[in-house]
Image 1: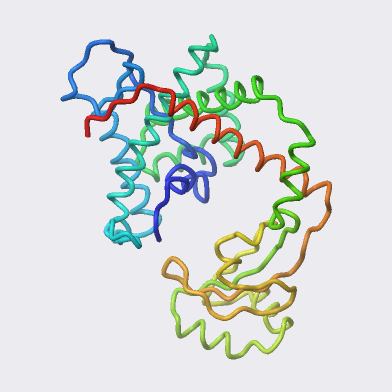
Image 2 (image 1 turned 30 degrees about the vertical axis):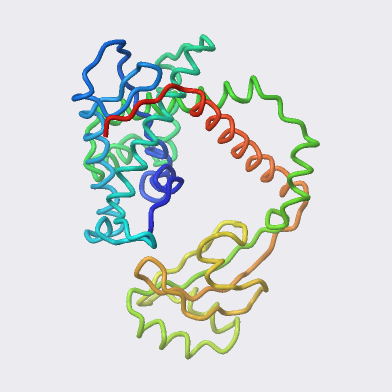
Length: 308
């Protein structure tokens, strides 16, 4: 698997901890005089410390190794860089953006308090079916509760910055509609099932036995099996697995797909072409894209110095 900047930011929102570590916002101390021996970067004279960078790098390295395997960080991308090298670079970029957000909040006189942090913590706890489950997930990731509380507080900063963006950038419905009409891929949603195998030979044996949609469905419903099953939510055709499958029609079975060292067989089971629902999703995408443009503009306007 290859890391991209967006994946670095978003990967941890999936799976075990839901959105606990979806974006770790890395606050830094404000200093007008500093030694670049102890910092990795400054944004308008507000610094990001090497200690903070090292702490977060260690967390991400541990996280990716646990989720994707011990060799993941040594794997290389198409440019010949290891995932660890990409992670280090993207983490610096992410930390700089986080400081830009903080500066923008201060500029607009937005004050943060513990209430937003507590609300986020309760929301996550509820999604994980209680505080005991939350603590277990924190422990599983090798993070102590103090670090988790810092992460939650910093996550509230990103939430506050997005709310600020919505307040000062009025989005028109006509803009969303135009965006929807121009982008064909958001005009249809797909839901699929997938059989997931650890062993390629096992996948081939099952694939050879599947002659039609009913055969595929029979494997989904088996109580005893040597594979796992994915039942997707509605996704666009840009979904990684769906895109790799090249499927477009219902009840057609894909070839075997190798993805993240596992083997998949997919079948689309339903579509969603309800325009009202699709427009609501399109609005979310449009807002996200607009926010990224707004944030990129703030980054370009900032006085950023790198010391790594």
